[in-house]
Amino acid sequence: MLSKNQIKLITSLQQKKQRLTLQLFFAEGIKGIQELLESNFELVHLYTTQNDFDSVSNEKKVVIDETELKKITALATPNTCLAVFKIPSEKKITESGLILALDSIRDPGNLGTILRLCDWFGISQLICSKETVDIYNPKVVQATMGSIARVNVNYIDLVPFISQTNLPVFGTFMDGTNIYKTNLPQEGIIIMGNEANGISPEIEKLVKNRLTIPRFGSLQKTESLNVATATAIILSEFRRLS
Amino acid sequence: MLSKNQIKLITSLQQKKQRLTLQLFFAEGIKGIQELLESNFELVHLYTTQNDFDSVSNEKKVVIDETELKKITALATPNTCLAVFKIPSEKKITESGLILALDSIRDPGNLGTILRLCDWFGISQLICSKETVDIYNPKVVQATMGSIARVNVNYIDLVPFISQTNLPVFGTFMDGTNIYKTNLPQEGIIIMGNEANGISPEIEKLVKNRLTIPRFGSLQKTESLNVATATAIILSEFRRLS
Image (tube, rainbow over all chains, first blue to last red; front, side, top):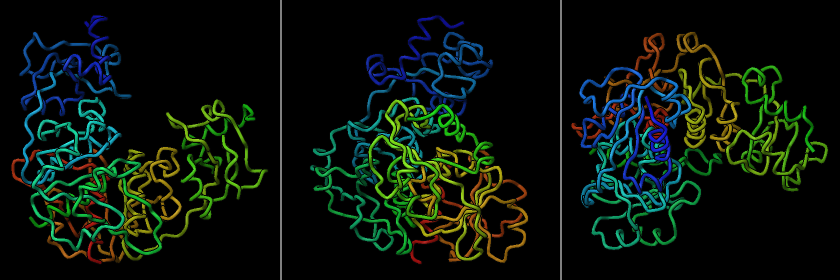
């Protein structure tokens, strides 16, 4: 049985401000929750319509019905379970290997998909500008499909970080060198820009290695790729023969 | 001024059944509408809150206010304009070059993103199974960002089509050959499967060329890539040095 206060608390976690104040977030769906449980995320409460998750103690497990789940879900079609976790403290940035940096990605689906790509391509460090959508936004958590447990994410001011790094810095622009014909190292920072405006001018100044994904065919008019699909192509190209 | 019947007609076009009956669909936003106007799409009516689109005759242009736009839009944050077009008759399939075939893609955002990728990589023929989401679904039209005007899309039964083709047939599976180490031709049919279930067993039997996108690193647990990002990687790989 869910109390009004519990419903109020959980739904309030859809707001970034409340997540920051309470240092809590929630995930939905068996697979995503299972992956967070297996990682170092600290469970507060699990709400489930099934009597599943045997590994979770009865103090933390609340069996609810579908009507109750509908009151707390952020999904149009709710799953069978929702779990509230503590937001872990940010780990130190690992400044080696390939790092992906996001300059104001605003769409939760894009951020979630990009995190899943990082996981696939073994990018263990993701850096987000402070304007980037919050990684604990329920739509992001949903889109990551569990990858949130395996990629280190930090929110920082990108300009000072990129100014001081010894790693080569890459970005994609319309006038860059053909990514398919460039030798790409296994160390560096790859910057992906905002959905509408691309990489911001202050960051662009710091990008020494300008790349481009060529369009195929001269008659094509497509102006841009979606940022998640562009990230897929770039990470694939960096990793393809490594 | 919008009549009740006009509002009813436009909102009814959010349903596939109504689009099929009336052979009409709608697009929103200046850029997307402009691209459809420049192509061979036949405009029925343009509804705009600005007095823009000089090329559109006054008989077809209806200036409305924002309150009216909110009544007909399919978007949470409406643009400034919405245009109703006739659905063009399907052109014959061009059975040459690279063709992308979709086996039951259900998410409108994925289909729209894939269409945009086809446009970028010069894939002029997209074939969809009849279970694939409708290309004239407002969310698909929105996600294509105008690319809908430049890619030929057909809805067919995939099994008989793939059974009779002389083109090589490609699909991605967990146990395929490494896509980065395979010689990929510039002619063939590339099949992408459903978001949850992948390529269906009947289609899988017809795939002679089994490919895989390798994961990076042995500790990775990511089970799959989003279908749109997987399509991005595959099309990039087919086209990269062509």
